[in-house]
Length: 340
Image (cartoon, rainbow, N blue to C red; front, top):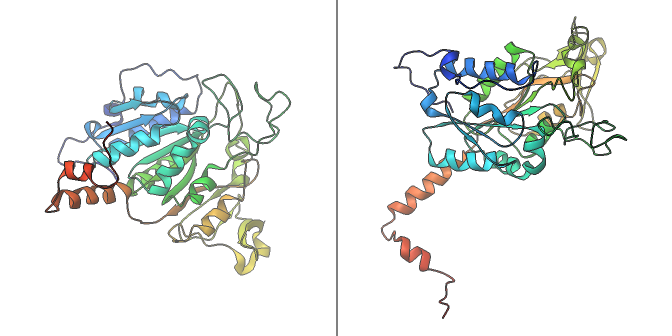
């Protein structure tokens, strides 16, 4: 997917940073994500003039202002749609979508779903802080049951969405999850996403220090993260804990569960993100509907499939090359009529 040019002068992170003052709350996880992406683009040989960031509305959607690339700050939830048109019409560009759990999963849920199922050649980053930050603290589609916020003073009664499960249900070809506070893991995950051709979808747990601080403390806290982070490594048995004392096993009903490694035997799941059928990856995503217990991180699915924009451009080329290609005749054909 990357738009690279190895014949030009190597760039650094500073070459992808704009001169705009970065205006997120002090301590916001967005700072770490921004720095990681700027570094990533320099390391993979991307060029600012060939890179575009498209965003919707929300704290995360300020992202294009802070990148010295092309950028489109669009309307609420519609970034995937606009990015689809851009990727289809300009295959020379490296297109990124930056969205949040509110922008991408509420008003933008339909647009996100169709970009995923079509396998458009773009990268989608969903910053999940389980809250509406820009509008000052209302619950979001990923807020857990019972969450008490400004719009849910008696506790949320909505069942939360699992972004990874949603993406896998839409059969997205690349699906991953990472954390803002883990720079190394985030860098590895985004590098893999950028290398994928088709839609790459990465959910990033992002801490909102003002309205939902420590929402992910069970998987980020110094004393708890080793017990609750399930790291997915291609081709490796899924075990975790300070001494690998826990294992993920496949159950008879198709689901997965966590058991002591000593009791797992040959039931331990060996991770394979390249499986064509997304069933196993989906079962893995359901281990932790909310990050208050052991939660998988890494690449859930990475498969090859026809890319939407390639197919569209191929149709246009074939139509144009047809001997009887006549736009006016095409528009006048079929069920048309004159109105007097």
